[in-house]
Length: 116
Image 1 (cartoon, rainbow, N blue to C red):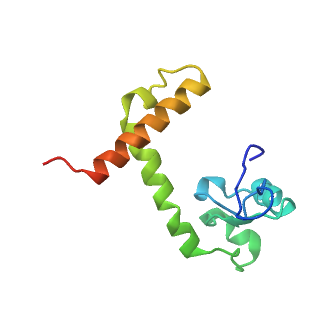
Image 2 (image 1 turned 135 degrees about the horizontal axis):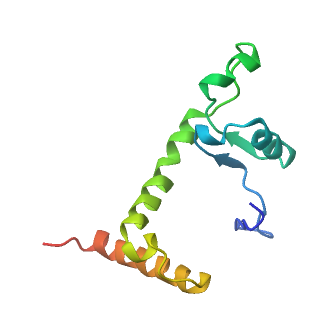
């Protein structure tokens, strides 16, 4: 989270996102507290075993924002299909990022001109 830089039309980039989406595996009080301290809205569904802790009052949860997380999940899953990226052949971070960029270019070209 400390490496995030979100560009804005005017002014310096934001260093923290406004919201953070995660699955139920990230639904822990420590994570939610850290997000609260940094003024980041948590878009994390509550686990079943946590309902008693809040005395029947569910935590605030934006279902629509959580559904938009699907776009990122599909992109990551597509990148995992690229064998070179999934097995991490590139050891240096700069080379790995270059391969991610090439994979994304290949994806865009495939979308723009589908195979006949």
